[in-house]
Length: 115
Image 1 (cartoon, rainbow, N blue to C red):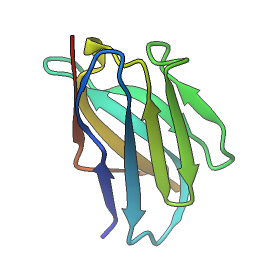
Image 2 (cartoon, one colour; image 1 turned 60 degrees about the horizontal axis):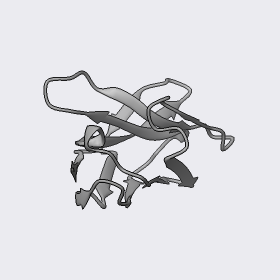
Image 3 (cartoon, rainbow, N blue to C red; image 1 turned 30 degrees about the vertical axis):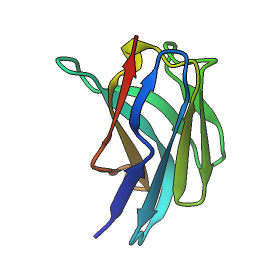
């Protein structure tokens, strides 16, 4: 069974940085896109960043210029700089299967930014 495992979350002060990592294992298919969503308490899950198989990255407007996503085969990373309290959320990595477009999810990692 496909597994995605995130790491790197934690508590950081506003203005600080964190780097999230996600490794996909037991992959038996081609991965199309990989990336990150987040969900804050009481809010819907929102897309943070996605990287296509060709390496093109797209970001939510709220994180552009502060977050950088990168990918290395079945691993995806999220470098988060200039963190704000509103970035506090559980961050989930995902991988999209090709050609079915089925999504697989990690268990999530908590990021808390204190003011």
